[in-house]
Length: 59
Image (cartoon, rainbow, N blue to C red; front, side, top):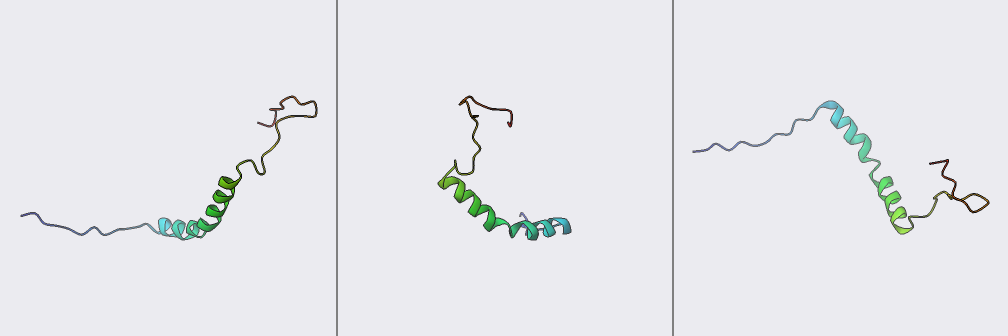
């Protein structure tokens, strides 16, 4: 006969602290991702200078 044991989750105090801290950011992250998916080129920087050539110095 095999004995079945129940799994009991044991979390460290730091894990619980981080879980509470970052779970509040979930809605903000979701909104940001949805905006990016709707228009991925919104708020992107231009890579050309005044002469029309590519300016990759900022990369």
